[in-house]
Image 1 (cartoon, one colour):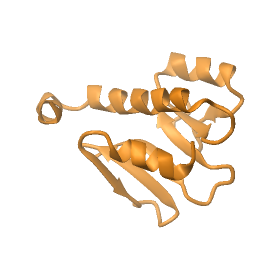
Image 2 (cartoon, rainbow, N blue to C red; image 1 turned 180 degrees about the vertical axis):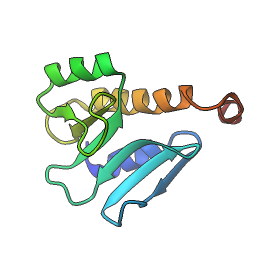
Image 3 (spheres, rainbow, N blue to C red; image 1 turned 90 degrees about the horizontal axis):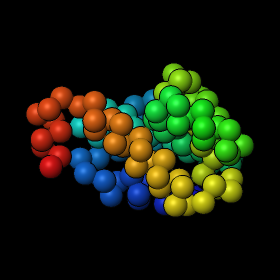
Length: 116
């Protein structure tokens, strides 16, 4: 998966905004105003930070050398994932979906209802 594919996949979800609040070199994807993915534009290889359940985060880090604790994030709840480092695209999409769903699950009930 390349950065543009990640971007298009994230933007295809409900209630997504894309912005650059940390500077022009980091894309930030939010659902209902809460971050679920970040992607630096100048990283080689391309990476993304994705929210993750702490137990699953550890499992993914053990399974893939391309998954490591989230750079500049809470390392318990975020992973940094190399996008073109050998993880199958289907698995990367699952990681993005998981991140999105974790954030949606924590939204206030009224905000979740708007997504339905």
